[in-house]
Image (cartoon, rainbow, N blue to C red; front, top):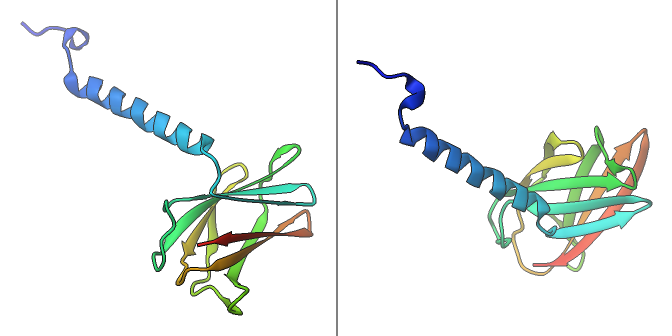
Length: 141
């Protein structure tokens, strides 16, 4: 006789539930992790979480850029990221672009690549409500 489905032990369902719990905890811990780079100006804070850790030379990767102010996440902002090496007077070998807002105030920046070690300067021009604010972050690679 056939038994009701609910009385069967289904190892696939147990494994799937376990995998979902692990994935959720990894995502939650990544979001709670300390930012790789941070900057602030005129009430705005920018936190950068690299999807490549540690950063490597000559490898294209993506960043998650989180923009917030005293009231919380800054949504629907226009963000332009530029960068270069001030000591060498040249820019980046790529032109990274914000391609999506993943969550309120959390943006995906794709096409980041550094081609040599040294001091790098990244500038984020954030425009909201028609008012631009530029944040600068210097870091050594």
